[in-house]
Image (tube, rainbow, N blue to C red; front, top):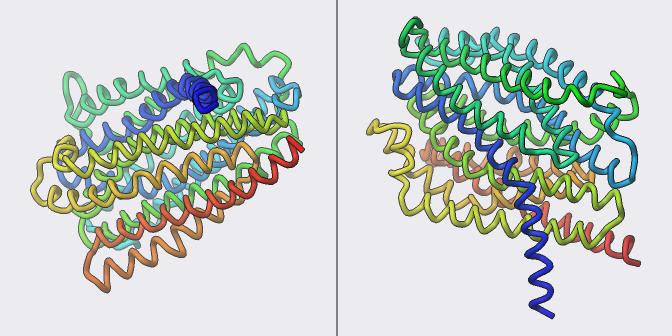
Length: 443
């Protein structure tokens, strides 16, 4: 009996991993594009890496709100498919929704530049921060188009091409960064402006390439569908707010400590980049589970819902536990990938010890969040994120940073408590929900 049960779950794990692997590649592609920026910036100069750390914290906090609003596309369409509804007709509605969001958040990003002078950063960094944000604001169109199309295709479990494009973008981005930042061959040395131009080109390439592939879906699709868009917003806005509070939780720290010292901002960005790389694996599992859970929920299939949820959670815990052990045992090895600066090493290594401790909870909360998205319970994700970061994590981090003089390390300890709280709340909610669903679907 135990062996039979194990084989059943093993088959579900294989199916989920097969679905997840291209998404993992794509997610790693996205974060490695950012890691490439940090890597090149660190070698260009300390002011460049400090400026890009602050600039990306500001721009990404805006950018992620639109991503959250589009993250509802795949679970909504997966639920429709489970209910045997026609879904291909929503292709152009999804595209138009993505581009309208891109226009809105491009404008908001440009307006944020007006406040940079008043944020108290080092005077020499301010023009660099402004320059980067202004150019990167226009890259939102390509990025949002790619993400919206990726979500649409993901609902059909078409995941290979969108994520291969993301992988190709890593190499294009690094090449453009080197050419434009340092002024190699026929290109002038543009410094931080080169990083921004490279991001604009790469994101535009990603969006347009995927759109050309998806032209086959245009026939028979509608430009707008009010009930569908209402569903996207209803399911998407809690995801969006949850992501906003999560990103603000991490990125507001860059802004706060960046006012004290650019070294703190750079150290925070380097360690956060490392933590983000490992986070991409459970994030991919979360995306896959959201689709599988959404389809099973729409079809009223409790066993598939439960089994995909269990194996997704288990895979995430094993991977993040292993990553945490590596971070704890050889922190200096990982930090030196980005910098050999002694001051940065001294600040980064204690942060990576803390990151090692919260890896499991970070992976757990994102997979549980994916299950909740599949069940269309996205309000829970929002409230858990808000409470975890802004009632527990950031206040505790501020006390440890300033009252106990732990500075940046204090904030990272606060983030560890936030992630533990978020995962604990989501687990309790889902445990109760599955009890109800078992009675509903199985009687």
